[in-house]
Amino acid sequence: MDSMRNNTAEMIVEPMNLFQDDRGYRPDEIAEKLNVDRSTIYRLIRKVFNPLPAYRTKENGQLRCFGRDINKYLQKYMVQPHNE
Image (cartoon, rainbow, N blue to C red):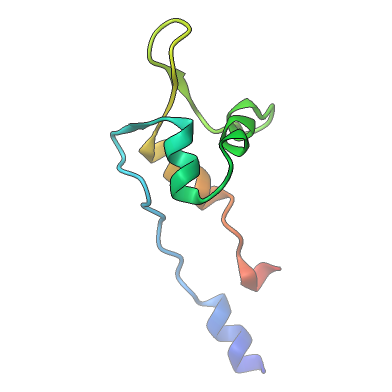
C-alpha cells in the first residue's frame, strides 16, 4: 500500500494543451470541446474570484478566450486524485 502512495505522489502532471495557445475561442466552442453546457463557460468567465480570462472582439461583440488562458485555467483547477 505504501508503494502505491509513493508512486502516485511521484506522478508528473503534464500541462493540458486541449486548445491552441494563440487562437481565440467562443464560449460555445469551449463548451463543446469540454462537453459542458455553454452556460457553464459563461459562469466561469463571470466568476468574481479567479475568472476565466475573456475579451470582446469589439464593443458589445462576442466574447473570446485565448487557448493559452483556457489551458492554464484547466491546469490550475484540474482534479488531483492523489490529493482527494
